[in-house]
Image (cartoon, rainbow, N blue to C red; front, side):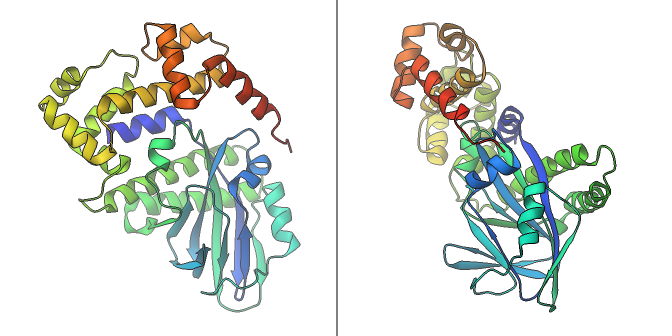
Length: 327
């Protein structure tokens, strides 16, 4: 899983919990698209992955007209930030949330909300993971609109759940340091969820996540991500992973639908795009950092990928970020 770890270490995840509730049936909560939540929960974060952990009872997650049943220990994740509904009923119907739900979400108040119609109880905590959608694209592109894993099927998941619940109680009482610890545990929970999801993929599954699990493709991905600036060739990569050049290209293309050098070029340009927006470095310096000896060659490749030359891309992206609404 080296490639998976390398991607995550470079993404700089930023996690937190934002809602803690105990509902009694009938109940329903409407969650808007993540771009509408980002200005409230994590200003300046380009993408939020929303998730909900069911602590007790049962619920249904509604997305696009379908309902996914949830039981205690389930975490339901919305990797692409789609609007969705959680409710006590298999039919979404009308949500029954109260103004208190909105107030608690807006204020990130983690004291437990109790609401609903007085029937069977469901307890849940809700969180988000902020990430850069460009650098996270290899992982996010391999995930469905909604996924579910149960964290109680392993000791690590049970430990994370218990630790999060303890810290939620501490955060409710404003104990110093609780929020910082919750952030780290939220990130660990998200990584654990992804690991469980990858492990559940069938052997014949293709895509980046399955490729990262494959010993040959995963190792070549790890090398390219760890040393993106290195002047890799197919021969170099094949020698490092211990297969022939033709075998590497065939296996890599089978999983990722493109050969290794095409993937490497795309990844270098993603890294460059991030540096253009988030650092003051010059175009020539960034080009060299991602493995281009010629600034002109970098400019041509960048424009092919993003439709704009690097300098203009930097200006327009920075203006767009500056125009994002603040809370």
